[in-house]
Structure formats: structure tokens, C-alpha cells
Image 1 (cartoon, rainbow, N blue to C red):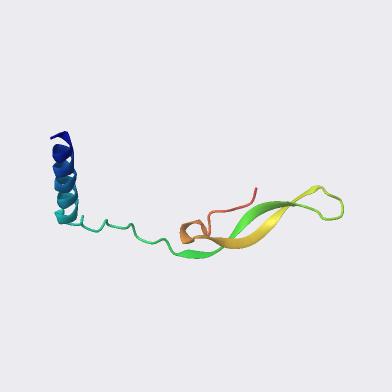
Image 2 (image 1 turned 120 degrees about the horizontal axis):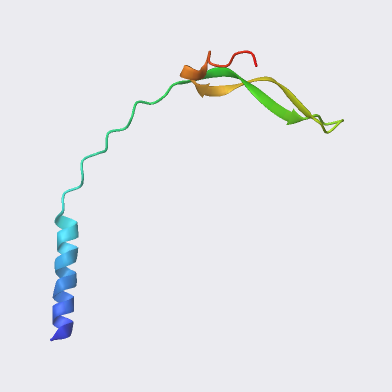
Length: 71
């Protein structure tokens, strides 16, 4: 008796999962275009092993393209 109840509940749950409509696709936020930006970077000098700070080029959001000024 208990096995029949568990089996029928399992079958009913599986049927409900299979017949449930797929959810609508999620809206994706607008893709941020990436541009070449200048940023302040630090690295170790290979010979002296001290930190060297300077400007480098890399990729980032176009909104940050002109946001880095003199320090």
C-alpha cells in the first residue's frame, strides 16, 4: 500500500515536471562594449625587484576610457 502511494506520487511529480511549460527567456542586460583604455599599473622590476608604477594599456568598458587622469 505504501509502495503504491510513493510510486504514484513519484510518477505524478515526474509527469508534472515534464508537462510544465518552459519558462520564458530572461532579458539580458545590454552588452557593454569594450575599448582600449589606459590604466595605472604596478609591477615588480625584474632586476631590482622593486615596485614600478606606470601607465599601461588594456581593455575595459568604454565608459572608463577617459576617466583616469593625473595622480
